[in-house]
Amino acid sequence: MIDFRLDSDYEDLRKTVEDFARSEVAPVIGEYYEHERFPYDLVAQMGRMGLFGLPFPESYGGMGGDYFALCVALEELARVDSSVAITLEAGVSLGAMPIYRFGTDEQRRQWLPRLCSGEMLGAFGLTEPGGGSDAGATVTSATARDGEWVINGSKAFITNSGTDITGFVTVTAVTGTKAGGGKEISTIIVPSGTPGFTVDAKYSKVGWNCSDTHGLAFSDVRVPEENLLGTRGKGYNQFLSILDEGRIAIAAIGVGLAQGCVDECLRYVAEREAFGHKIGDFQAIQFKVADMESRTHTARLAYYAAASKMLRGEPFKREAAIAKLTSSNAAMDNAREATQIFGGYGFMNEFPVGRFYRDAKILEVGEGTSEVQRMLIARDLGL
Image (cartoon, rainbow, N blue to C red; front, side, top):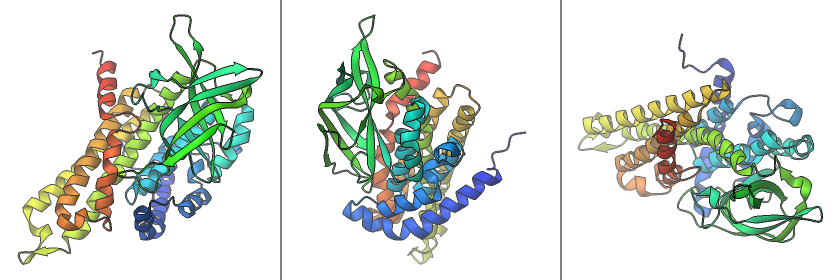
């Protein structure tokens, strides 16, 4: 029997996060967004709620849940604001998950409790200024010398990398040459404040204005050899697996944004009058909202299906790519239609749909562009 309903644990979590998003995030996020301020107080509240520890074992300070629980929370947050949602997503999926998946027992004991509590954020240093989607084009280097790694290079567009509570960045770097002549790429933990590690000024972004994003520079940065994360030379494959999981989480954010557009439009069309009628009485508006709900529903089913395969331990790369592609399209299309329904008010940042419109585009770019998702799907089909 197929049942798409959330079980009681997931539903309780969904309601808890929904209440937090509407009672705590919604009233204040507009001002944060306008002034491009990182919402430390909201992050602290999410930490106390256990959201940063959702998919991790209780032995490391986590909640003992799973990755789908994280996705349920992300969807509810993104219905109200994507900056808060991506801060949680990156903190868990890109910051803490590599430590949990590939770290030694000592690395897990050192970092995970503070990451799970939200007292600390970790960042994922993969993208480089000249690389973009070509992650294999990494030029940042790390040389083993006298018991240390000496790191030189730069990274771009790194989320959660420059906050007051950022504890480290996990960096991909070329550590040698493979037998066949290709690059040996490894991952190394670089604690914040390490000499030679510089966090550039924050970017001026189109959207996600409450999210922390910086470029990073490494000039003869020295860290102990034991800061290697996972197996030397396996860094590229490790991070590809992290991205596969992360695409399901980004899909959940896309669904949340798309649903948020529906929510806001339903409220607006019941109040706004034109030509002597509520605009929700006009079939043209009704059809727009119906299409928006249909896109959201379809995208939610896609990420549910991907998460289901992941939790069963089955291959899910194609399903994750489909979910990410479908949800980012839904978010972008719904944000555009919501802005159209709101008219001039939709172009104002004081209205949520204005923020949604600005936030939606990056979902077609971050954690694998839509073109990369199509490539992955086609490749999995044998093309």
